[in-house]
Image 1 (cartoon, rainbow, N blue to C red):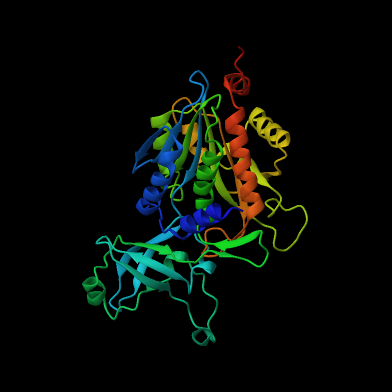
Image 2 (image 1 turned 180 degrees about the vertical axis):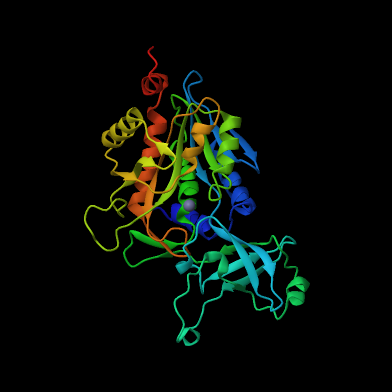
Length: 358
Ligand SMILES: [Zn+2]
């Protein structure tokens, strides 16, 4: 991987932005996106998109990541100074305890804090509790609610994971937070770079939505506003391959993912075939994937007359936690597929896809 690309990955995975608090990520993304496109469209309640003009009579194709990562919001400050929280996005309670986070106050302060963990000494003789993520208290070291307030902390402040991005001994593997979905953000920028000087047979709308993790909210607004003919959600999925059981879907290093089904989208057969054909023509490794969770592609059926959509991406281990292990070759395959689709889909291909005759 080029050093420039690695630095971009470090920058975006270490940037902190959870649902409703995406400003820092959105600002960085907009400034990196602007020189790569003809126009920029941005709306804090929807997302940030670059418009790259190609063949004007061709279809409008949207490729969208999402800017947010999972996090928490302060729901109450206890007399002890501990913070009660509400999760933003889905968390496995087993991964929340004893981790480092950053607290962002509405006055602009940033403070380190940790999610409390019960020491094994205090667990002796106790049954394992049925803990929910929202039951775990957060500790910024305040002595009282009054002291927390003196530091500007209030209900509604945001709490976001803090993790340095690290390349592992195997140079094909990285550990970072927020690969869901800074993967998508970096993929959009890297693909646009590869498309510099290329006149595509379509108009590209390439960007990222807000608030995916709390219910695909930004996607509905941006799809409504920009009205693409075809929508590709670029997102991360959960790998399930560590125990080496054969036949599991979502394996690291096996290529980019083509989601054929999730609870919100059944990928139409012609769209599956188009992606498979494009991948094979360009020697891009891919794996079909059935997902138990949805992406922004699910919003497409609820907008206008309905927009054909599919999610593409990568499978990564321990998503929605501080420490996601992911594959560099899978990321590179995902970028290559976005570039190949952007170059390929012209009006004829689109008409065949949606069943129109010329
Ligand atoms: Zn997610």
